[in-house]
Length: 219
Ligand SMILES: Nc1nc2c(c(=O)[nH]1)N[C@H]1C(S)=C(S)[C@@H](COP(=O)(O)O)O[C@H]1N2
Ligand SMILES: [Mo]
Image (cartoon, rainbow, N blue to C red):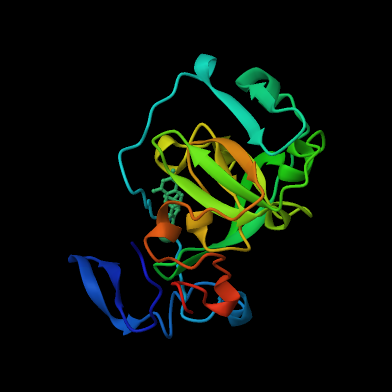
């Protein structure tokens, strides 16, 4: 994990080999600055891409993969992998914010908007439980998944999404803390009542707005 600081010595190549330079990033080699207003309160800028998983990375055969929308709707919906990647796709570039305090700016993804997936869902439900291979769940109000704010993505940075980051497909809800962006996602269950998901049952905030620092219950 790499943190941005202005006071770390940077390595400098000389005729004697690599030595610690007597200069600091504050004067030389400073990276392009970012607009601090893009970093929510209590967060720091991360340039790498940490992996945070509560369990092992599940492996799924694409021929057995499907994405389902079930629960409180007139007729359940389901797509095979082939059908899913044939759906109209978008290429969102978004900032992401983990509750462990890293934020990463301008991440680029490809996937299907939840607006597209929910087009055929005739429902009076107000809540969603998102579920994944491996048993992870997270809950959201349905309205946080609509309005061009959420996707099921299968590419990161122009490449197929890596298994440790949720491949073959994960949810992406960048306006909420990243634990809501379920990796290895396989479906949504529409519900009339709000049902706390995996981390929400362990005391994480039910909603998780990073701009309001909704980290834990009671925040
Ligand atoms: N299925 C599943 N999804 C998950 C998690 C998990 O443990 N299992 N961790 C969540 C948390 S806490 C974070 S911060 C992000 C981390 O995503 P990354 O590993 O791609 O950075 O995934 C979220 N989605
Ligand atoms: Mo997280």
